[in-house]
Image 1 (cartoon, rainbow, N blue to C red):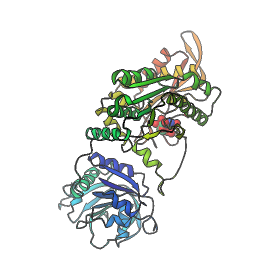
Image 2: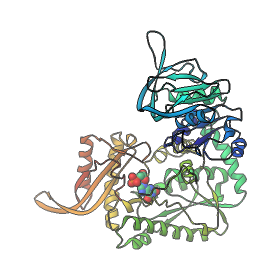
Image 3: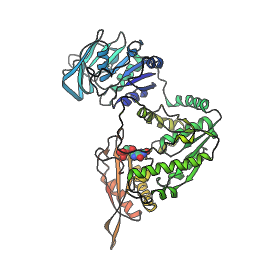
Image 4: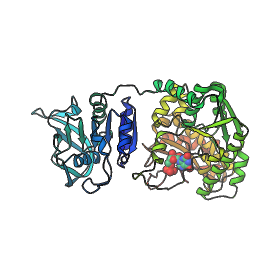
Length: 517
Ligand code: XMP
């Protein structure tokens, strides 16, 4: 396995995902772990991530010295290369020219890292790579033992190596797709240089995970809050594979789900997979608690609170349960890990409805803790979950509660459910569903005037939202074909009572958010 030390770059998770795409297991840990931790990790190689600091003055943003003493290969990326240079006796300084974006680098001094990798050659036979740079500092003096392995005019040390010790540094970012051969470079590092095998795959993960769950749980009972989302669904299927009927799932219908969602969840899990699923229809209770409440954050808190109450009541009906299973995935684990590299910044509370309190007195079972979202999806497929469920767009915990602007009413939820189903239906029919990251309808509780036949109408507005994004932190509105939008609008206005106008949201994030509340 590979150890990735995080110096606070936004791209660190991408490094990990690229490494895992090469079927090599890796973990991200903050850079300020101890020397003992680094030794005990038993990595076959270490990657130092980028970060926002300057290596010449951030004296406390250093890799543990053990990194360079273990005798395993080390790859420093951007800041990671700079701190490597400083720590091994080289020098870093502000480079007169900031480099940001695409750049081309010339390869020099044949190195194992770039062997067989190039994007083009010039007439004199020199090889070039197209890379993505983002830096204002540069290595200006190599540490002893190193040589330059890539350069260009603005960055004379675009990559450096001491192949003898297996130390490599790249100033550019091989983890982003803009660096065309980036994935291959990381592949050479983990396979050829570190000697890792190709053993991290989801089909191979299943028996390992099953054994681990059995050992952890023994013959005790487990409960799990099943939401119908990817993470809890895959966690449920995996745990069921391990312990069968020792698992009980609780599916809470809060009245804010999509059309036929409860039926679909019951069909898949209870009937198709034969799992024990308790279906709790608590819609009335949620709607009552939400009556008269218009503030988005207050709505989120109420929905979260009522969910916990309902779940807790169900849990007490199973007094033998000792474990609470959750679909926590790796990005949640990394994000909540306390370290210098993390800063809190809340725009929305993103109340995770799965977050249950300690008062339940249950031990936590989180079998997806090491997995990224794409791995969770692969695992779901390997476990036999339907493709539509595993590749479904994300759906927020508070559900339609944050897509009905202002006060939530049953009547509004009914209208929104139908409009949303039509939108999704048409997206699938036009092969657009998988091309957008998230799409949904929003209910606007304002009325506008329309005309139908000879009569005047005065009805509600539905907004359509479809976005494309990598990470949901920033997003573009999807340029859906006008004909498709036209069909959706027509169908909604004709088929959904109470709506006479449909609009399309063309705001990016930022400044807008994806959800309207
Ligand atoms: P925003 O609206 O912040 O959404 O751009 C980014 C992503 O997060 C989802 N989202 C939520 N998920 N509870 C959740 O579990 C929430 O309260 C919540 N609010 C937004 C949103 O659907 C999008 O995928």
